[in-house]
Image (cartoon, helix red, strand yellow):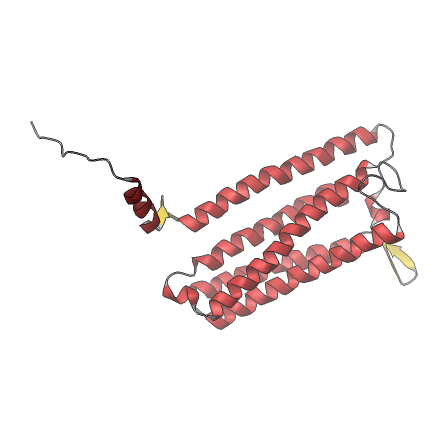
Length: 225
C-alpha cells in the first residue's frame, strides 16, 4: 500500500507569503477579482436606492403628486423649453466615455503608453464634464426652483430626496472615477505597468464601465419613468 506524504501545517507567515506571491485565483488576477467583489457590493447599494425610489414613486402615485421629470429638468432653448435636454447631453457624454475607456484598455494591452494615457485622460475629462453639468443641474434646482432633499415646490417631497440620493451617490462615484483615471494615467506614463502587466488599466476600466451602466438605469427609471 502506497504511503501518503506527511503534511505539515504552515505557519501564518508562510500562508501570508504564499497568498502574497500568488498573482491569480481561478485564472483571474486578484486585483480584478477584488474589483468584481467591490462592484457586486456596490450593485446592492444602488439597487437598494432604486428600490426605495420605486417604493416612494408608487406611494405618491396614489395622490398623483409626483412631479413630471420632463418639466422639472427642462431647459429653455431659443425661447422654448426643451424637456430633459441637459440630462440627454450628460448621458451622451458619459456613454461616450465608455468608448474612450475601451480604446484605452485596447492600447494598454498593446503596451502603447502614450495612447493609453491619452484615452484615459480623455475619459477623465468626459467624466469631469459630466460632474460639472450635474453640479449645474443641482445649482439650478436648489437656487432657482427651490428644491431641497426634504421638500420641493412641485409635489411629493420624496421626489427631492430620491433625486439627491441617487444622483449624489452616483456623482460621487464619477468623481472618484475621475481621480482614479488620472492616477492610472500618471502611472502609465511613469512606466509602472511596464514592469509587469497592464491589467491595472483594465481594472480601472471595469469600475468606469460600472459607473456608466448604473447611470443608464438611473436615467431610465428616474428621468424617463
